[in-house]
Length: 422
Image (cartoon, rainbow, N blue to C red; front, top):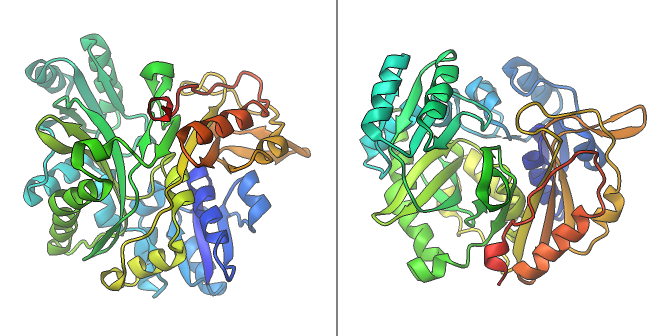
């Protein structure tokens, strides 16, 4: 197939890497991509959130499938424009993408579908926020209602910090004050064609900047898959996945279909395992980053077939995707001063040596070539992805590769997947 992947991050690089593993090879193009993606496939300077640019390019270049990576193009209606032209696209339309674009919408859908989640109250003034925080009590959970690039959520026991976070995001729109849910977090991706769903393998990510889950929330500093500890709690990974499908994914997809907003694409379920059962923390409308980087390397079933079936209503006839038993770990290399005001423009070296470590691939996120030098252009620069026979092996490979990479002032966590390495 001729496939266009929209986006410029490590998630998109991981998707492209998975597509390129298939035989026969696909003709893959990325827009706008990054320096690492450009080494693997052609890149075109499209604005991925511009429906007209994207649809015109797809039409003129015979694109047979468009895969939307980030959330902004979905909320901008890029998938709607492509579908109107009859081009298969993996990603929900604008109305269904509100599942991520508006937390208030997501809570309403969950309520209508009787999906288990925490209590929440939407506020629009500081006085309302103060009252809601005092009603729910500590720890406080404050979320920007709209898209916030992974920076809109604060969980804290500091009331002043919660108020400050609410004050900042109220300048941009509504804010949700939520009940705090305690337990292990799990990310589960499900492919949806608007009616049926197929699950991928669960992953766990690390949202805090520092070792031991200290420091500010980030877009994600690392992840691992599979989750061996699910066996102890649920009997097996499949039993866990079955419960999520039955109580969360299918009711959500069916509710959206009933409201004439079919969800076609990737339903990302951010879950928490409480003492009362599985609860939804949030939904996203696309592959998660960095979890994609550890889920797709383990995927045995060809990714392209799954994405096309979801895009064209054909998931119901497919078997569940098959995954290898390998362990996969990714560690994010971030720029100095991330997540506040990352220092950019610094040279990045040692990538060839890192890639030479057995089982290691690099998923670029914020890189560019300037004056023949590879430089970091953002906060999360790249993901070092390592696959191995077990987590001890995969971790060792990931950190061996990281040791080869040089970026002045860079930072990364040293404890990714440590608790499952045994």
